[in-house]
Length: 121
Image 1 (cartoon, rainbow, N blue to C red):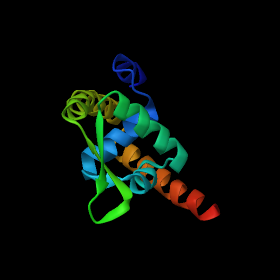
Image 2 (cartoon, rainbow, N blue to C red):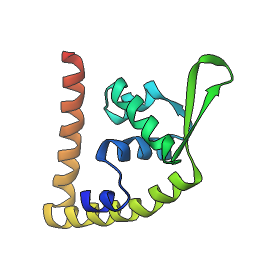
Image 3 (spheres, one colour):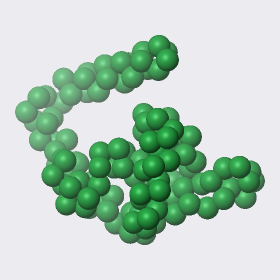
């Protein structure tokens, strides 16, 4: 997958942010950090980079002047659509090699590990 991301000059954390935006739609940086399992300062840098490349759009929240809402730009949506096909291809290939049930159990265990780590902090 990394080689596909490199074709678009996108890092794995940037891809996580773009996927969250694609899945959730308009959201703020705090929700992006939580959903993408990223630190707040990292999300701030990622958003600056993606905005500079015109892959996202940031606008003030009309209901709360302290918050900025983030969405994918049309170009950002196009990149996500292209890369999502590759992700699906790789996911299907992993499932074939590793087994769908095992892959599902692994995903559940990784989610549980993530929650356990959150509780330590």
